[in-house]
Image (tube, rainbow over all chains, first blue to last red; front, side, top):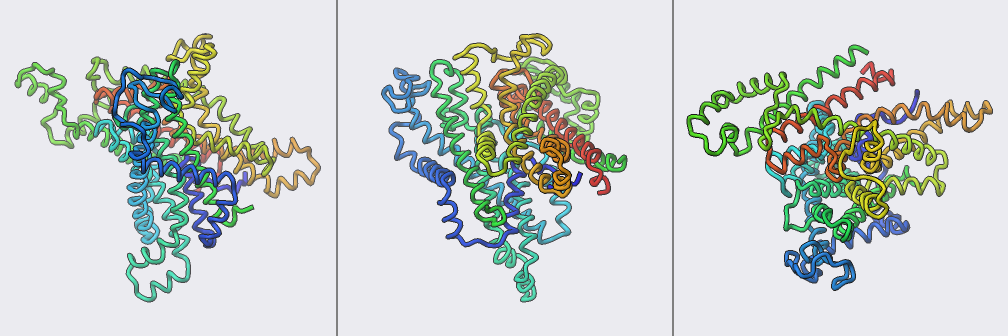
Length: 307
Length: 313
């Protein structure tokens, strides 16, 4: 019974796995940006993942230009057309073009993910820096983070939807809350490593303010760890958000959202499976791309993990 | 040992109170008036006022919280707005199927994940290892509902050999077992990847340990080295970490139950929220949170039993 493996609480949670991965990056020596990019591009898997992510973002941003039809324009004469008939990817239960719906759905899903990650990481980041910089606060703050961490995101989703009613805001609030403790751990872990460096002591002896030290010296040196975490977390948040929307707790009709679209297609699963399958496939592809990219980024930024 | 357990118990109390407080406040922030709801839309002002009195709704908030806690201790979580069934009764009916589903998923997903993780670690860097890791990443990225809908399409429609609508019968009947196969594959499917990853890391660490080298040097057979000297040690942390992961599994259970119309607590919660049945929603959320707190507590204690190093802290 002498496994050297870190037996940290919750270390096995999908999110906490990310925490460990990200913090290990902070502990590693800095790697030049060019090197990272070259390493990413030399691997076929990460190349494909990177292209997929870029494609998805472009598709979502330019949805209104790319979409061939109106996302809310019903055409009840042409419902549930299989792919190839009239439209490349067919139509849904209300005759709306699937390409259009997928593009707009992707936009909603990615926006939901970005909002949750931005809110959650900002609050979590502040808590993490505070906990690292002020050891007195650390115990209380991190204990509270542990408590938050012991509840799964779906439960936050249920509770928030019960209070504010189902909808995109409820999902974003829930996923932000679920992201806060993870980000706090990443930031605290990496900031503690950075705070031991000589230049921090130098900055302190120059009499710089705490805020200035954190913003000028600690934060920039934690960025690569944060970057790895955000990439991996983004995929997880999209997956969770889509699941909540699938349950009907997220985006409400007629808003196009990938999870809600998959739920919508359940009714036609046997005679028009594309209505469910296509949005599910898009979610799968995007999440997989973010996961692969996050893993490769971590490997590239952490020289210890290189083969 | 006892001290550790007591310590954990003490730490749980404030969390428990916090969850109950949030559950209580949940009823306060919603705009609907519970007295009005219970009295019905045609009730006179006097009747509503009498009910308000009876429910203690004109008391100060902290007193209401005390009353609420008292009722909770007696197992009274209110009555569903939709069908007037007591919330506790409905909870009692759904908790069994949810536990059933989770057990049926773990029973195959954990051994398979452990097996794949061990194989991957043993043949580290080989094609097999890379395939297993790719499979694991794909599993983590797969939406639960996609897997569920895919299985329904395949085994409910294309080769219609398995039922997919709800709990067909109790588990000790043939129909019951058939009915749980697809939901259990769905829910367990998302669990295999993480278990495999975790096991792989743990086994890799263990394979490099001194006592494993000693075992090899003694000339023991490879299977004995792996099974007796590596796995036994490597699996202890994995088992405890799986316990902590149950929460993640329950999240998946909510989706799986909805996809398969499985009469569990997750589906009950979603239905209650969508139909604005607040007492029911509150009850299910409190119940689920309690479940988590208890599981976490149990894992904490179990962890100390398995790993003596933890007890001191």
